[in-house]
Image (cartoon, rainbow, N blue to C red; front, side, top):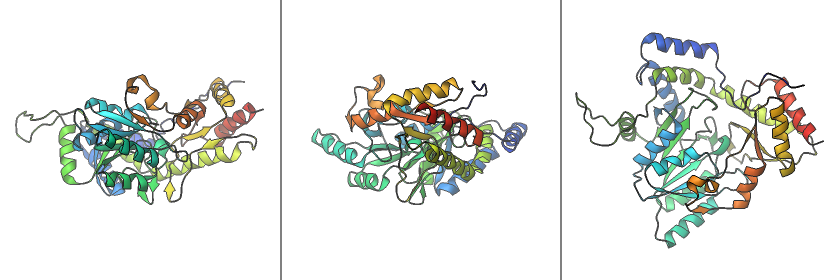
Length: 373
């Protein structure tokens, strides 16, 4: 019998306190990018990351601002994770720069330091010096940052951390997004905390914050009339969205712990005969397990997705490597296509929302276990 109550992959979980804060923001009359909740939310994030944080309207716009602050221009080359969502790379194209895609390593599925080093050496032989690296922490799992940082320092490359999926994750006790020169967050509807849409840019100092803020507010000069000396963008957020984010952020630790519990439940309750793989949490790493992602045998993966869908349970295939997609097919790629093709062909994201109950989880695991019979 099919259950008519749908179980979604990673739905927002909004409680009454968050609804009340949005109502309060509306009642205050401050519904623009200004207001007490914008200040409150950005201050909480700044304390958490120990850096300046600018709220924006999306993670994508945050990456674009970080590229602008890094000095990326038409014709520059930007190193970029290959196994990630397209929004990681789209802002490179906004600036008419060239992405260079770096493949994954086997343990965390994030950018491989080995392929990164090989790419830089080969680019040097071609007379190309990349200025910036965008490294995405996939599904909240920390990348192997020490090696990546060392490589970038040796080659004077600026690091932008795409931590859109990684709020609440840590690398050697440092929150992801605070390790590179710039960091970005997403508060899209499916993230650990949400403002329905929105993001943040994590910045190293007040000077960079002021310039990013200027660009995000249409690059208006500080005069009492409308004056613009450079191109600006409409990348700011609103007090209403910040009200929701501020209250959600107070529950971050609880939400992360629940997501980890859900992953561990899947991991511990699949039957022994099921041959599966998963992202490895390496020493001194802490992942938020934003999504519970598993690699199943090729003959079983599509069957599981079909069974779950038939029972009104959402699952989703993993990221399609960017070098395989038409919009990016003409750009350079360094990596192991076999590994990333395996991840794409056999990977499945299972329901991971922090309000999943034990009955939901029991049902999902039972259906998966039965799929192997």
